[in-house]
Image 1 (cartoon, rainbow, N blue to C red):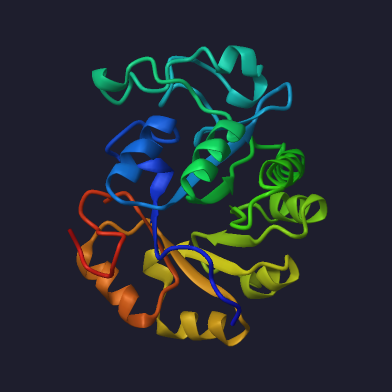
Image 2 (cartoon, one colour; image 1 turned 45 degrees about the horizontal axis):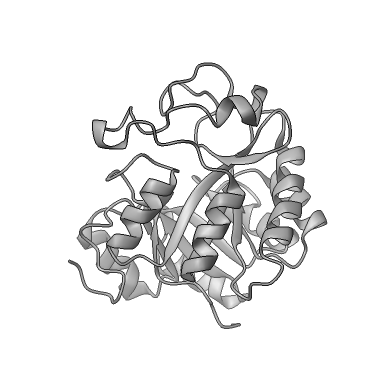
Length: 249
């Protein structure tokens, strides 16, 4: 297989649950625990700006309400995306993808961009991520890994940015998933951790694909996967797993 440029340990949404997810504050907390690779969710605003948010709706993790994808970036950028977590993070804004890219590049960090489209905007979001990531990482040798549960979004990203590595996300091993990952030109498959076993890793490695998992917070499970030869572990437990080695803090 080709050399894999990304660290084994990946901080989920910046810092797992230690800070408000998908904010620059979370990235800083994750970095403070030694993490050098991060996963985040990216959406498209109504006026074409890419920003970090997991949910389709704003209520759970911001001071806003309604569909995030139907609002302008000027409105989204004013929301409090930290107060829901704790008083210490009150007033933390939603970050744009460009802001996160600048932070990662200045620190030499790897980024896994999960394309998380507002329902019905899979193609538009995938296309926008491909174009913007190409622009933002034009002078960087450590390219972001683009992943998604949406084959439509990955295909659109492929069409606009064929040079960027892609990964298919799976919560079940649905029919024809393997053929789909290969047809999309993916370099990796990322599954829910319970789905990953020795046979699946061997199947992926056998055709040159990397095997990654989400979201591993149990040390026994992490040891099992490391023993099987997993290529990447996305975790919330950034304060318990030491990313500098295969041991636990």
